[in-house]
Length: 443
Image 1 (cartoon, helix red, strand yellow):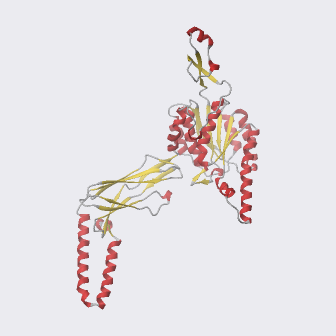
Image 2 (tube, one colour; image 1 turned 135 degrees about the vertical axis):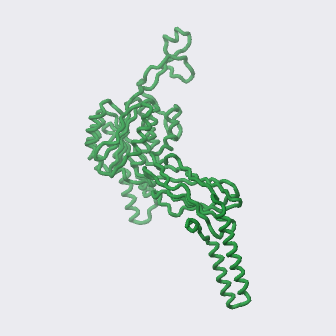
Image 3 (cartoon, rainbow, N blue to C red; image 1 turned 180 degrees about the vertical axis):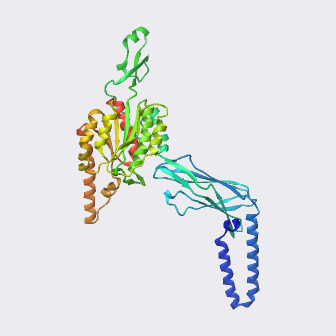
């Protein structure tokens, strides 16, 4: 029974069989061909038996395994590698059909690879998940054919392998350098002119070219008979909370990923930058109520705690309750902190409904509101118009884009910082804003 289940007849066999049927029709017209056609049938049968013996006499035949990352990175390309070792003494053709998790909706996955005798081959492909959670791989099916190519033998490996999908840790590694480097010009990170002296004294050191002349310590210079300067360091241990709106407005998808998952990925990366800058990072999410809370700390286990919390964020995309957000912040965050709020406003009416609560938060804390530009509207605006309907669509799109800029100006009137960004630029813009605030010392 196991033999029958693993045996598959290839298309090549049916093509030959179809040719033989054609020859039998010809033999009906030319009887002299009849015996020759039966000889071809005998040869085909002989090769079929020989092909079966070649593939099934070896017990193992091939060894294969699917190598996946320990966890998948949401929104990024994740490499999956399949290793196949040919234990036959002849070259084989391997057709790989991997049962990819249902979330990807891939139903035509197939890779064909020729493998030399007693050789090993690596086959790779990429998967891009667009939602967090557990992803189950099915069977790794490999159909092996000998050089005769009449039949295939199916081998099955790595059944029911589960890989969790976490917020984008690939982005975390990409931007990790920015947290420990003072050279912040890469990827658009801009250097901000420092205003004032919101710095802590660290030490007195000898002057080197490039030091600020205003920091020269004249008393120490006189004692040492050499130029000495005061060295300062940024104020540390400031609390930064990243608040994620997981309500209805964050359900909108861009490039397969919801705004909520863009915000979660950005939160993970920015939390790491905050901790590397010696500040305290905390997070919470809200819709009908405030939950998924991690209080601002800078202990060694904080990043792992934040990662696990972000992984477990779930939502039904209810309407967000900003009044509850305001009360919760007032109750639980007593020290003046930087609060970076990931949300989305499409219209001024939507902002005005929540503005009293945002103003209330901004009275006690430094509030930064991050909301999203609709990139699909940009396509409509820059598209050449040819009909009245297209002109109408373009005017409406421009109106919505203009309203987004009005929202940013309205927030600015009340001392609320804002970032209007495209989803793909969210992480970079959020890091820029945090570094700008820290560099200017306005917290």
